[in-house]
Image 1 (cartoon, one colour):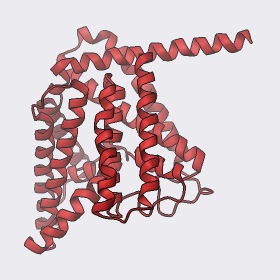
Image 2 (image 1 turned 90 degrees about the horizontal axis):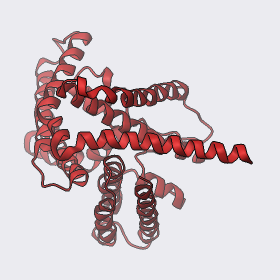
Image 3 (image 1 turned 60 degrees about the vertical axis):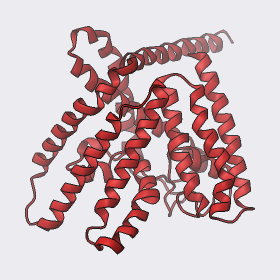
Image 4 (image 1 turned 90 degrees about the vertical axis):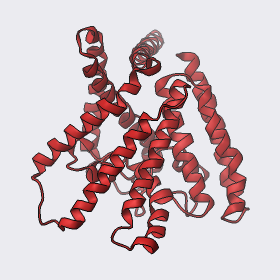
Length: 348
């Protein structure tokens, strides 16, 4: 594990160096195809960098940040769009925004503090505790049904992703004093697919997909089928791209050829979301389910489709067992390092 962490530092030092190049070259090359061509070597390098890592957690998270978010942000920036435009005045800001899953609020003021930050910290602490609790639950996995373990794995992924994103945002918020947009908005409170995917789940990805896929497709569709129905093909295209990107990230975890369950999962959700949006447009809010009922239906749909298409991927190539083993390794590393630091300072 220590060797993997050393590789992680090497990957990110090189990534920061590449982003420094992008920051300086963008000021000398006009927006459009010329700037995109100047970014292509960096985009390619970001694609191969995660291959240096082998663990599920570190490789998967690095691939998500570099291959997906950073590359999409650079493509948008090449055409003067996205969170990097207008370009930040400081290199450190540019590197933070491009490499981390953050988005600075347009009205951000370093002296302003979000009154919800304290409640957010409490929720984050609860999620950290929940992830630690899963570590103990895994000790009894031989007594649990396989589907229960897979659902626990899904919870494990969600908690690790949300804690990881919050950990990335914390230094930027503390050092620069920026007010950042939400990364997750309590997805377990969602009442519909539109609410879950559009307003609550992994909002950094939602914003990027909206800029790079949804908005262009919607503009094209408006000319063909009109303003009212133009969002539907745009939504479907965004889910297709999301599915393909998840498939790519999964490849980094397993290095195995794709089997397309991940893409099928997102295409299915995209189709169902389109049906949901179309039904709302046709009914014009004349008929609406109670919030409690819609939440239960959504939860059932998420569990059913996850067990059918998403969870089986955790069994392939030993992903589930590797996740559990790595969680124990991380825990032991933190404990050992903590004891080492305590001994060092105590002796001093």
